[in-house]
Length: 58
Image 1 (cartoon, one colour):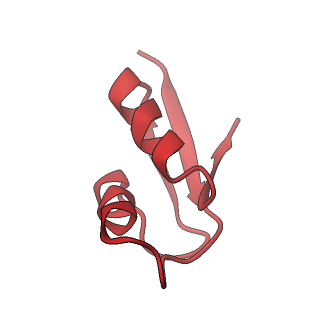
Image 2 (cartoon, rainbow, N blue to C red):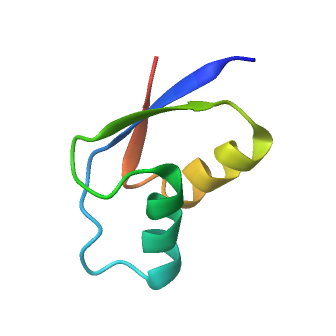
Image 3 (spheres, rainbow, N blue to C red):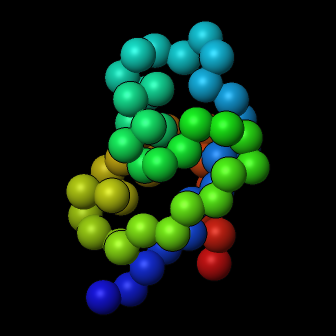
């Protein structure tokens, strides 16, 4: 299956607890950290929840 790279571009300070938990489950937490995950519908939903904090790298 395809993979997707996710980069955190903004910090989590002052964000709601559910957004912090979503970043944690994505494997992020610090600015400029990049993770590579398997592209699934549930992952896309997590990205959509914190889309203002992350960017998808091609």
